[in-house]
Amino acid sequence: MMIRILALIWLLSGCAAPYDYSEEADFSRFNTVALSPDMDTTSLDGARIADAARELLPGRGLTVTEAPLASLWLDYRLDEEMRLLTTMPNMFGRNGFWEEERVYGARRELHLVLRLTQPDTGKVVWTSRHPDAFPSDGSRGQERREHIYQQVAELLENYPPAP
Image 1 (cartoon, rainbow, N blue to C red):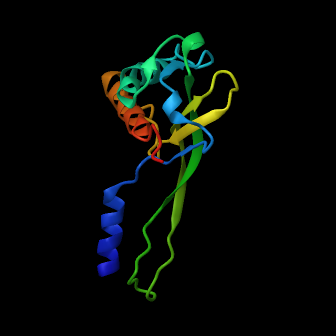
Image 2: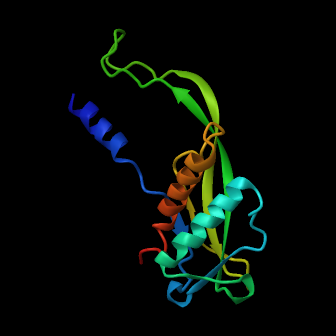
Image 3: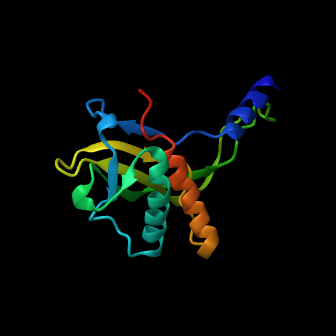
């Protein structure tokens, strides 16, 4: 019973967005940021990601500027992942102490990844991938904009990286 309670607490507590950064980068010298010239800002989702980033980056110590003047460029991508749909294992099943977890399908998910690169070298100095799926095609308009804004905000919470 105690293991079930601990597992439930762990599942409900959520996870912070995982991130990584270059140990060689001196983040104190980065004070300006621009959207990467290669960043898709013409699609609806690309424009929503760009708008959220422009609004949130100043709160992370970065002044938004034009690409030629920036010490960092922000870009994004959507990583595809196949997620197996399973049933939770039954710890006290009819057929013994532990019943097998059962797979009953798979679902394609996209995950938002933000990257900061140095414009002069193209080297990625910081990246973060959201653990939750990017909004599905079922959300539209303002609801979709708010969901994307929330994901960008959660990703940028990890910048600058803790030493």
